[in-house]
Length: 222
Image 1 (tube, rainbow, N blue to C red):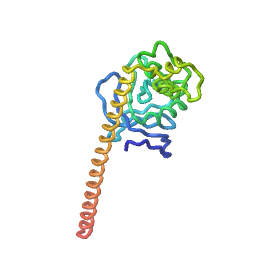
Image 2 (image 1 turned 180 degrees about the vertical axis):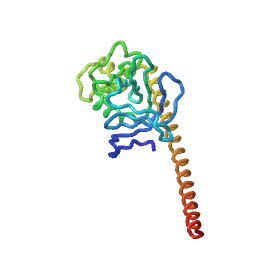
Image 3 (image 1 turned 90 degrees about the vertical axis):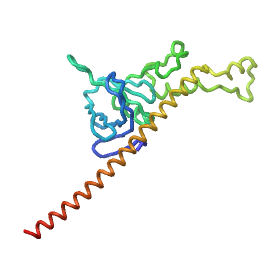
C-alpha cells in the first residue's frame, strides 16, 4: 500500500500515501493524495474523500521540502481551504504537479537549504525542486581531488572539507529519520485498514449468501 499507484482509469495520474493535516491544525492523520487530470483529491485512511480540489480552484501549491507540500484554495470573506501533506513518496508527485500547476507552484527555497547556507547560497526562483535537492547533496558531500591533479596541497585540503557543518548534517539526519518514521506509520495504518476492509467484505458476502438462502426458502413456501 505504501508504493505509489499509477492508474489510468477515471483520470487518475498517480496516488501516494501521505500524512495529512488541514489548515493550521496540529492534528494529523494518515491518508492519500490522488492527482487527477481534472484536479486533486485527498482521502483519509478509509479511502473516504476528505476534499477535492478542482484544477481551476487551486490557487497555490507550496513545496516546503522534497517530502512536504501544502495546497490552498483562497476565498474572500471566509477561511481558505488548505491542506499540508507529508509523504516519503512525494518525489513521485511533485514532478507531475510541476507540469499540471507550473504557474501555481512555489518552491520555498529556505526549506531545502541548511540553516548555515540559507543567507549565503540562495537558489534561483526558476529552478526545480530536483535542482535544489541536487545542490544540497553536492554541498553535503566532500570533494576529493583527482589523483592526477597538479593543484597545491592547500587547495586540495580545502576541497576535501565538506561545506555543510556537522550541526547541519545532524539536522538533515533527524529530518530523514522523522520522514521514515512517518512513512512506516502510514504504511502500517493503511495495511491495517486493508485488513479491516477485507473483514467487512467477507462479512457482506456471508450476509448476502444468507439472504439469498432465505429468499429461496420464501419462494418455495409461496
